[in-house]
Length: 620
Image (cartoon, rainbow, N blue to C red; front, top):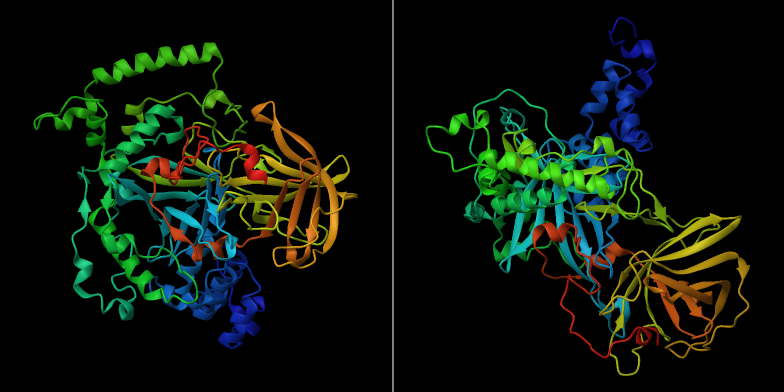
C-alpha cells in the first residue's frame, strides 16, 4: 500500500480467503480476536467488504465473548447487525466480574453479568443459610445498574436502580467511557453541551426491535410513565467550553449534585415492570419474551426522559443563583452570582485549612490510592467550584465512567478511596496447574457443613476469594473475606480469613471422622497455616495456627488448631446462584451504587437483632 491507496485482493494475496465459503471464513475468524479481525479487514478492499458484510463472521466473534449462545439470535433483532452486537459485547466485557467496596464491613459485593442485550450489576446481600446451604436456599440479591446497547451497538445509556418513598425507581444516565483494563467504576455527574447531547438525526434505538416477540404486547407500550421533575430546557447553541472533570469537585458538592440530578430524572417503575426479571433465570424458566418486552419498555422510558436537566434548574435548586425572571434569563451567564462568590471565598478558606492540616486531595486517574485515601500529584487535584462545573455545559446528567487506576492492594484486596462514589474490581485468579484452589468459594462455620448449631436454625454465609501469592520464596494461598452474613460484623471487610503455606504439609489430623450423611471423611491433602482471630481491636485482627484440609467432593475446610473451629468451603458459580436467587428491595440510588458510610451491620436487608449474639457463636 502506497500513497494512501488501498491495493486490490490479488496484490496482497487475499484472494484465497475471498474464495472461501462464508461458513468456512466464519470458522477461521472464530480463532481471531475482534481487534485482529478489524486489522485483517484493513488489508484490502476485498477483505474489508467480505468481513464487514459477513453476518456469520461476526456471529462467531459474538460467541467468543461469552454471552448466552441461545439468545444471540434474539439480541441481533435489537441492533443493526452482528457486527454492531459484537461492538457492544466487546465494549462491556471488561465490566463483567465482581466489584466491591470497603463499606459496609459485612461486605459490598456487586456481580456484573449478562442481561438481555445488556449487562446488569446486582449486589449479593449478606445473609444466613438454612440446613441445605447454597444448594437449596435462594441467594438474596438487589439490582444496582444496567447498561443497554443502542442500535449501533454502543453502550451509551444506563439505568441506575434505586428506591424512593417505598417505590422502585430507575434513574437514566449516560455511559461516559469504558476502558478495556478498567478496575474502578465511578458514578459521576456529567456536564454536556446541547450539540453533543442531541446531534441531528441521532437514533439511539431502532424503530422495530423484536417485532415478533412484542407484537402481542400491543398498546401497553404506550403507557404513561411517571416522570418526577424531569425537566429539560433546550438552549440555543452556545460557544463550546472546556468541561471540568467531576472528580475535581469537593465530595460534599459532588454528592449534592448527584442527589439533585437523580431526584430530577427519577422514573417511577410500574409494578409489573419492577417485578420482571433483569436476566435469564434457570433453564426451567422461559424468560426470553419477558426480557425482550422489558427492554422495549425501558427504551420507551428513555424516549420520555433522556436523563438530563437544564443547568439553570440545577443552579437554582442548589442555591447558586436567584430565581431568574423572564427578561434577564438570557443574561445569566454574564452576571456575577453573589452566592457563588460566597462559596468561592468559603471554599478557599476551607481549602487553605485542609492544606495546613495536611489533609489529602482527591486523586486523579494517574495517581495511586492508599488505604486512607491519600494520593500523589495533589497539584492536579485542586478543587473546582460547583458553579464552575455547572457552567462547563448546558445540560447535567448522571454518568458512569470505568477507568484504570494504579491501585495498591493488600493480600488481593484493593485499597480504596473513602470519599469517591465508586466500585472496585476484584482481581479474580483462575485455577491452573499448581494453583488449583484459586477462585471464589462460599461456605459456613461448623461441622458437618450446613448443619445448624445448637439453638440456631441458620448459619452465616461467607464468600472468600482464594488467591495465590509468592512471599519470600513461599507460595501462599490467601482466603480473603468479601462477604459475611452475620448479624454484626466479626472481622474487617477484605481480611485474610486464613493464610496457608502450600509447600508445608500439615501434621494435624482432621477432627471429625464422618460427614452429615454419616460417610467416612476422606482427606486428600492438608497444609499448615494461620487463621484469623480477634486481636487488638476490630481493625487489627490477630492470627493463630491452623490447617487447611482438602476433602472429598471438592470441599475445603480450615480448622483452627486450638479452638477446633472449622470453616467449610465449596467452589461457587456466582452467576448460576444469582439465576436461582431471590430479589430484594434496594436502597436510595446513590447509596445503592456505593454505600460510603462506615457500618458494621447489614444495611442492605433487615435482619432481626439478636442481643445475645457473640463472635464465638459463629465458630461453633
